[in-house]
Amino acid sequence: MDHFDYKNGVYHAEDVALDTLAAEVGTPFYCYSSATLTRHFNVFREHFAAENPKICYAVKANGNLAVLRTLAKLGAGADVVSEGEIRLAMAAGIKPSDIVFSGIGKSAQEMKFALGHDIFQFNVESEPELELLNFIAVKMGKKARIAIRVNPDVDPETHAKISTGQKESKFGIAMSLALPVYDRAAKMAGIDVQSVSVHIGSQLTKLAPFAEAFARVRGFVETLRAAGIPISTLDLGGGLGIPYGKEQPPLPEAYSDIVRREVGALGCKLVFEPGRVLVGNAGILVTRVLYVKRSENRIFVIVDAAMNDLIRPTLYSAHHEIVSVVPPAGDAPTELVEVVGPVCETGDVFAEQRLMKVPNAGDLLVLRSAGAYGAVMSGTYNARLLIPEVMVSGEKHALVRPRQTYEELLGRDKIPSWI
Ligand code: LLP
Image 1 (cartoon, rainbow, N blue to C red):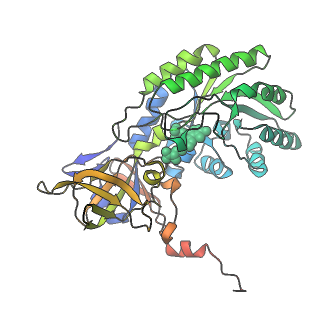
Image 2: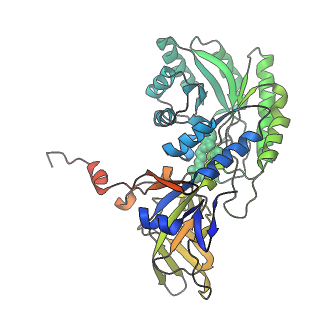
Image 3: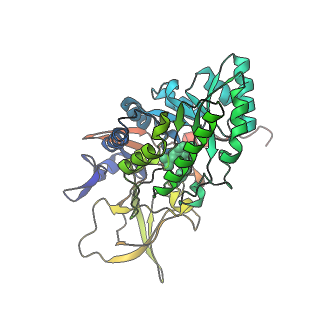
């Protein structure tokens, strides 16, 4: 459930009318609903009330400081993949003791930074990474608490580009190869083995792959314990899907039941890394129609947002629902249209053959479910400015990231004196 809906014929974010907001901040812009974020976090937490896990929000899904601060105040920790994300999490008020550090390419500098702040856990993804982490920790006189991210070889049944838990994937260490690595880690002076971590992919809409992966993790923890390696914590990653269109992802209660059934008996402290399920439906992208162009067999609705602002449709063929802020008049024709951006690429398409009431130039459209992997994946291709982000709470709204300026954009480049 989210807090974006029509009131008196105008699409609102909570109690804020989006036509008024668009007039104030200009288009395109992202808009986040604080009530939706809060609700999603609380629902996730409530279903694990008995376990009281660490809920380490995956910062990569949306790293805006206002989003992070909202979640931090609710008690979220952070799952991070770079020094930048550690800095963001801490700037938002998340304690280092609630931060887990994932990713296959942590640099020495990033390890030093994280160790210096004594973060909760490193999720180690290879043997060379383990060796470097140990080396650095010993030099700093520290112990790095770790999980090894195991790859259970389970098909998450999601888009290929966001599948991470099969043997062809670059992520984690194959479960079949991980025991000797744990054995080595347990003997390292700078390493404190505490956990096993797993994350098989994103936007999972079925429960079975989770169940399969968690069952394999349970078997592996039993093997580790039998080998004398104590495991006190389990990091079960993120990956829960959201409804973008017609898909029906597992309900939180079904997910928590599976977790309990598969790993409950291990008695481990649980860590989760949800991203999309917390923020995906808490954000929208608001854009204005520039032109409607009719060609021989297509109707192009050309909007002012583009693939540089929201890359998901072109990168993952992702579906985002599109609604009009003020629906076109009742007699507007309903037709199949292409909703496209101004970028000079054929792939700059938000929706193909979408059945909708044909909007008019000047109308405002909303791409729903854009809170996760939206603004964070944006860029300045075609020298387009990064767009603003607005957060709404009830009747209040605030610009939580202003539109980039041309001075900022041009100021990044330097012309050497010898040209
Ligand atoms: N933990 C790890 C180790 C991850 O790699 C990810 C996401 C998460 C947690 C959070 O997953 P979530 O709960 O959000 O599914 N840009 C893509 C999604 C990339 C996901 C990357 N890893 C998209 O727009 O669909």
